[in-house]
Length: 222
Image (cartoon, rainbow, N blue to C red; front, side, top):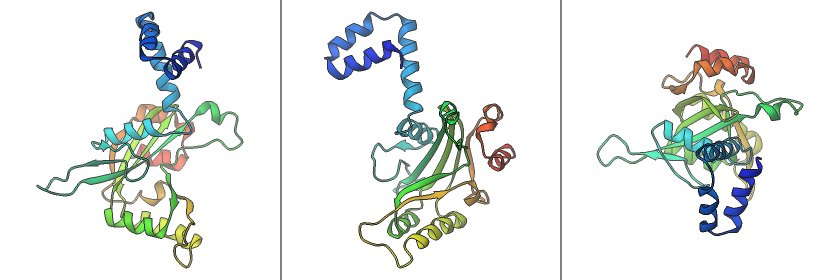
């Protein structure tokens, strides 16, 4: 982290807003741009929080972001008068290329995501609500794609159900969860209503080494 950005963050956390304002007013326009760019780079690549990637994904798909840890990630009003809101569940993935250089098995974008602490009961709720899934991929914080499809696509639900049945063959157990129910593009690639919300083919080509090759081919032909 740049020393100037570190100073700003520490002042923000330990001093008054007046002190922060005085510090920022002493900065040039170029310095402020550099500080903001550095902060956004750190935030959008944060491995412990996907909030900003989630916000970008939801907003670009035309939903209003819901800033809560529990529940769906966004909503928009139904087209019918008095219709109930249509919810979405965002699953953004980010590849940090610098981190990939130092780990044994570098991560690749595969059009996937996961549901944490999943249960049969949660699956039934999701099937009942049928939110639209928003699957997105970033490389070093740069958005490459957003794909949208309904949760209740048969292949997608079957995959989640199989994982739950392996973990809870006799149904849910109090206090226990399937820590991660995973999926990838194979679980929705045949969906007839799959929608491409965003796809940068130029950036896809530029970052192709960070993609599962079958998923890369799938995106290329969309």
